[in-house]
Image 1 (cartoon, rainbow, N blue to C red):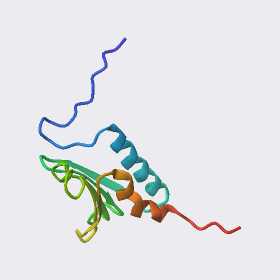
Image 2: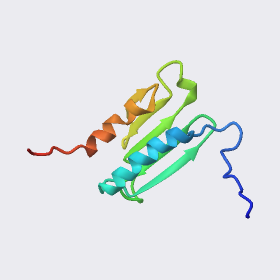
Image 3: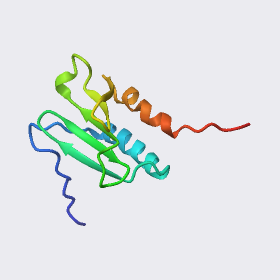
Image 4: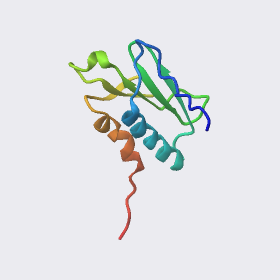
Length: 112
């Protein structure tokens, strides 16, 4: 049998997403790609913030940024959804409600 090498996590002292958060973000990303809204993404891990940016095209500014800032956990909430212009669209203590404005784009009206 081969030796399994674990995937290295972020260096000590950096903010990162944990597995359930990654699952939620990447599930949304996959659905948006399948719907034709997004084509690329970028990830950034820093000392103060972990960020996931979604792009319509790779040459543009990100349409949305999903940020995790643990320093704001006790005040405004550690999660933020930031729009293309840099304005905070939604902030909260949990990831689900922060992603709700993006998930609404996927809803379609079905006629009876």
